[in-house]
Image (cartoon, rainbow, N blue to C red):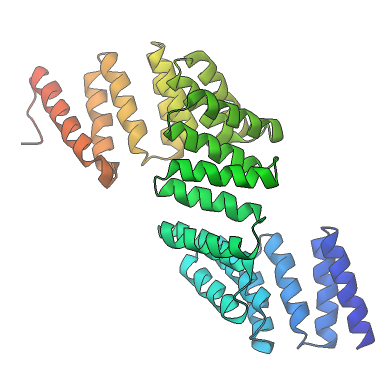
Length: 335
């Protein structure tokens, strides 16, 4: 087994250097010598996971777990791969298996919290982050993720406190600065929120979401032209950022540049044809240009794609369509 250990150690070294294909090749040599080496299967899965070959990674973790079902780290890593495949409940099941084996596995608690948050179980997610932080109070990602879950629960000041704890541990944690800015926006603190987005952008000038959020904050302060600059920066980074196209359109509309606004809404709708808000905003701009039939068509698409929380506004839009059609002397299709 000496040769197998040499190949295994080489694989670990290559993995630590980020040379993932070379690491996989080494683990394959180990498995040629000993197909029941659970560690090699697990580490090969880790390398495949990092390469984005998620299903292949899951297959490797399964081979490792057939050999050693009490390998808590492998259960957790399988959960991460399943989470990234969008199989959220299966991921939770894997984290639970890891925690049955090792109840003090802080990263499994954190990862389970992330998955529960994606399932809309925000309080359960907070409970998981608390378990992780009982074990390791300096786990920055758990503080940040707890903040996100508290945001989702509408507990914005508690969320800010969590982001601050994360930033005490790591002042360069970009996502905590950005998320803190978003929570401060909900608390109506526009200058503070912009300061947070600026800190995020000092760390990563290519954070499209931070540019987008800064733009939204500037709109709320009435700094429309500065907001448009921020949306443009976001769109330079990600040309398929539908929300940034939509918000740029709103800002242009506030400046009276209605046709440019419509062009932005159209770009958003090319990316996401079911984007209800963009259809509504396009309808508003077309109405202001007296293009009433085109406005009606846009509003009808808004009604078609509007999510349930827009129910009240849908009624208002239907009434608006009735009013426009009555003024145009047309039959009301909603009767």
